[in-house]
Amino acid sequence: MSRFEKYYGPDFNSLEKQDPEIAAVVISELVRQRQDVQLIASENFTSSAVLAAMGSTLSNKYAEGYPGKRYYGGCEEVDKVEIIGIDRAKKLFGAEHANLQPHSGASANVAIYQAFTKPGDTILAMSLPHGGHLTHGSKVNFSGKWFNAVSYGVRQDNELIDYDQLRDLALEHKPKMICSGATAYPSLIDFEKVRQICDEVGAIMWVDAAHFIGLVAGKAIPSPVPYADVVSFTTHKVLRGPRGGMILSKDKHAAAIDKAIFPGMQGGPIMSAVAGKAIVLKECATAEYQSYAKKVIENCQELAKSLENEGMRAVSGGTQTHLALIDIRSTGVTGKVADERCGLSGITLNKNAIPYDPQTPTVTSGIRVGTAATTTQGMGKNEMKQIASLIARAIKEGENEVKAKAIRAEVHQLTNQFPVYPELKN
Ligand code: DSN
Image (cartoon, rainbow, N blue to C red; front, side, top):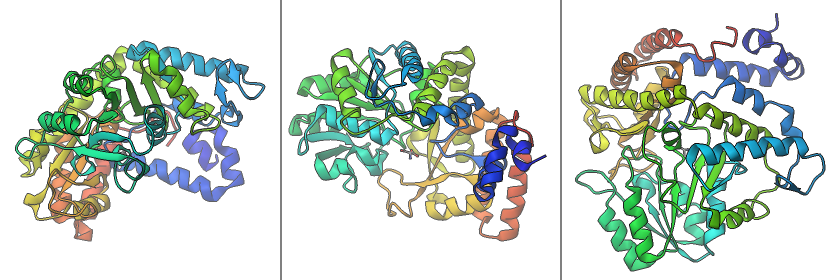
């Protein structure tokens, strides 16, 4: 039996035969994903059905344009996939319009700038050090270079979005567009309040829902869709789909969004990814997924609480979502060192700035943890308690190679009980 048959079934034999070097990496990455505990808040384990679509012959087809209006022949089959996906997206989120073609979340965001603004316009978005995203006006990103980006943040006392500051800045700067959404904000966003501010100043309301759209899909948290002009997101985080992006909007913005994606900034869509998006939208419409989304939050709350029991501090007092931001200054270790020590101990997470962080963004005083992947594996509250204790030990003892090895062995014992892709042979 070939190594690929062993891990993935016979379809992968040809890869191993043709390129054993790359095949070996694919195998060892699966082993890494299985053995270590995966706490990166933006990662998940997509279904085998999505993986199958991503590796399918749909990848071969150029389909510039939209269903029924393509610039190439032979699109009749891929048209079906995109039409099904659009219908499922509109139904699942109650959206008037959906575009499944963005190659990524950043691509979706570039299209939104293109649809609603011109270079030099003012936009208002959450600052990166307070949990925003590069495409929300960071100086090192096109959004901060080409636009007059004004940033709001969180209050120092409760680490929640400062809506008074947001409104004051909106009134002062009259932005063309206001963005809500973040990559490291553990609380819910008050979309009704943001809508009121947008209406007051005549701004487009854009929600970058990449992190939490899966929780919205699973009906575990309120949806921004009824309020926003436009909602962008990635499809591979809690949503558990293929790597890629998507945009939902009101009907009145449909033409502007579609034109901004193609021909505005992309050529042919990646039809294998569009198929994967269609598949995950079906998966998300099930009671099983809704129960998953609720468990993701419960697990994250348990993990945050357990880390607090270990002497660390959960930013904003805990979490209402799939991620928690942990201030680890009490350990005397920086986010960078904690990230490295956890890595050596088989715990994958990322260092992260906390609001008003005294450390630089490459060092940081915090870590970010998320429970999308471990919940997909089937872990529950007891496992979250164990993981918190392993993280605490890794941070404190992980510089010692022998101790890190021992922690890693315990991590592997835990993950062995919750096999990732159990349908693939081991
Ligand atoms: N890289 C993503 C995250 O980890 O949050 C944001 O794009």
